[in-house]
Length: 496
Image (cartoon, helix red, strand yellow):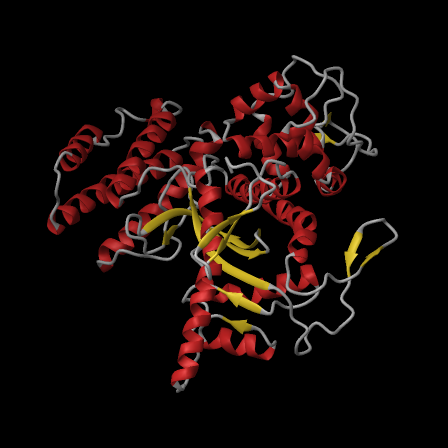
């Protein structure tokens, strides 16, 4: 049980007993992140004044930021904070210390206390103003409320024709989890091995009621599985035969477990993790038996990992990875900043998320977007009608017969929209290749979603940091295509 420290005003300029480099990224980030707002959201998870004092919100959020930005493990995150004074300043330390800031296992608690919804709210509050500045109309006036926070107000009616502003770029991707590629036979074999472990533990509690240990044929089952896996290619008949065998082995083990429990073997002897896996195994057997009897390869809520049963197969249709296994996240890109519009473990149709994304856009900025750009799945009839009622231009081919001039203008507009849509693909590339969203290493469903949300927050903050602190030696090159010559400003040295 944890409790929060007495709330106080957080100071950004912390006196430090070590001279810090003012050009350090962590010193600059400490001035940009709104620690007071994070503390307000973080405090909602604590009630009462009893129990151990929890770590501060700045330390928790700062540790998660460092881990995401640098790609560290939990242990490496703790070690780098312990050794780096700039990271300690970023996390709110008042002086440099060589003591470990926390135990590595606390990173799990940090991810639980800072859920994905909290990261999304902080992302909207931090990057809303920057995204608003990039729109194609003057920025609306800001008023200050009683609490001293900036509140964006729109004077004109948001839903009136011509009142829409900005462009919303929509797309979705899958953030794969770190699991073994699932196959039906491999999943059943893992279930069989876990059932045998459970039988061994339960049998030890009631050995006096059995003349001999229940026979599970584990050696025969293991031999059958190895003989199957060593074969490079399998016919449909061989796959069906091996599925039938594995289903029979798991069914026998589940009957033995029921018999042991009926005769008095307490399930309390099992650990919480093993007991949970037993419940998952029963559901896996039901799904696999149903698909085997019906001769189909899909079912609702299909489990692909016994240790992480919340993961679902996400069919993406890509050339090298047609199916991915992880959470599906949809983002809306506004002015180069990514805002999560939906995140789920289910394979939700992307087109159905367009209205909620546009409503989220209106909630953040006070008006609907002037245009919504996405791939070919978004402009269906329902979305077209919804956008037309709100005077939103939805990218894509228009319905009905058109003249040749209209077709040329439409093709030109679609090409321009496609060029703008490339920005969201670049955002996915950055978060997956640099911020480790191509393989989520966390195990729990809520902590995994926190890792995904932190990835997009870090990407946005890195972009803001680049725009605010552009080096003075940046060289700008301009191309004059009418004269087909390269124009370089005389103010820059020839090496540019």
